[in-house]
Length: 138
Image (cartoon, one colour):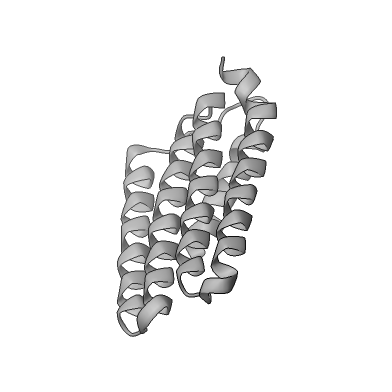
């Protein structure tokens, strides 16, 4: 939870500097990576206490959060169009994976609609990312 705030602050610092670029040191990067790993492990411990589909959803959310945080960190360390696009793809894929797992807990009659909604949301996110960042990375 706190890592997202830290990454957001770092992102704002990188975005708001005009004269001098704020560069993370290797030590700061290492600490942030350790924090991502720690939060992931703590999330998995919480997931172990849940049952059935709730546990699967929790695990998918922990995996998604870890992947998103890593991509965001990489985008902040190396702020290029490709790294920002990769971070958006991490968000899209993470949200999609969680949505698919959530659909496993839905009644069979509603599952097709749930999966369709998940695919639709993924396509919309992909189009938005490609409309802006896709042009910049080509």
